[in-house]
Length: 354
Image 1 (cartoon, rainbow, N blue to C red):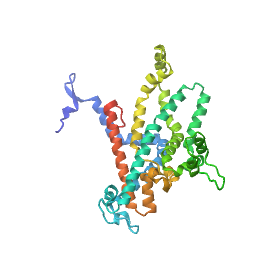
Image 2 (cartoon, rainbow, N blue to C red):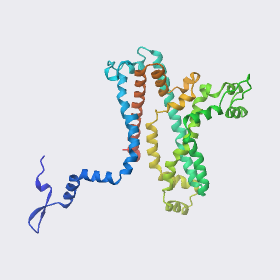
Image 3 (tube, one colour):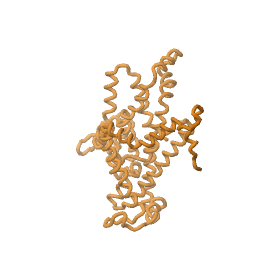
Image 4 (spheres, rainbow, N blue to C red):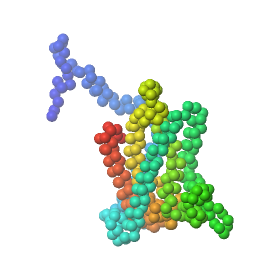
């Protein structure tokens, strides 16, 4: 429907004529000089935009450009040809993974890896997600700034170690022993043996060689590595709470635990929900580096995840199309989890990512 000129004008009773609405004039001026204002802002804050360049390059080179290779999920893999020149194969790789068409063994391995991926992520969500919140609450109760700074540095430090260093430490702590060479098991293995929680035979065989212990080792080492660093977000939300809220709770007779329950946790609930949604979104994304360094053929039954399945079959096994299909399925499910968690959160608490 066409708009008339009077839709943008107002009647001036004094002059008896139509004049331009001041608010509309401002909007017109903003639209007219939009790009000039954008360029002026960029020139003014050019240092900030220069700092954004490395991040943009990382996203372009490692996030967007590799999307072209996703076509390999639907193409017959031929190393001599580019992905664009390869022949279309339809959903054959997905059929192999889902129903075992043409290769039942690969399908069984994929579903085992998918189950392990979900279980490792779910255990990390249940046991790992609350730990940063608890650590942030403890940091908030430390009155000495010096002591709190020392504790924070000690808890943040593991995050700044490389994955190789972290896994090497874990392997040393639970390493296997040898009766012939006189080498003792790792410190953790010896301690659990002394407490009667681990048999000497298992300790000497190595906890990382036993599939029963892999998930526990993975989760505990993950909490040790990242819980302190992840608490930064929650601690920042806690220190932003107004002191008057604590004073009102103290007047009502609330102790420390009551203040945490009725003042701190409700105040940071929106932060918790946002972080929970992002954590659910990455529920099926497990960094393959740590698993790759810790697992071995003896522990595939509980340690093999989708990423290591794709790495083992795509690089070592030359089944690139199959590996790409496995990763794509993993990513699609992760996207659906984000959408579902965000929708539920928006309906239940009016807090969401978008």
